[in-house]
Image (cartoon, rainbow, N blue to C red):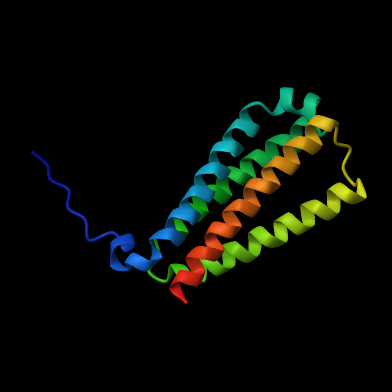
Length: 138
């Protein structure tokens, strides 16, 4: 018989950090899941969105990597510092995507614009949850 013992999880060390950890882990899960879907369905999505299949695959793979990194970072003891960084990154991402869409720098179809706006709205939602979690720790 084998037994595995682990130390206490970082999330139980600071109860006030639970909202922030949840927000970062939820962001990580959605990013990795969506990235996996985009990478697997790059060719059909490329026809719908207006981007190339290579661009779709690269974006999907980047989202999977970012999601995995976020999930690992949510476990650190000083989650406030991670939360502030992720919050700033999400806000900057949303602002850059808005500028790119308004300027028309990408050859997106209507579906591509809609999908991008939806993903950006979800990102802003996670940023708000992360903001609430960071404020709770302040």
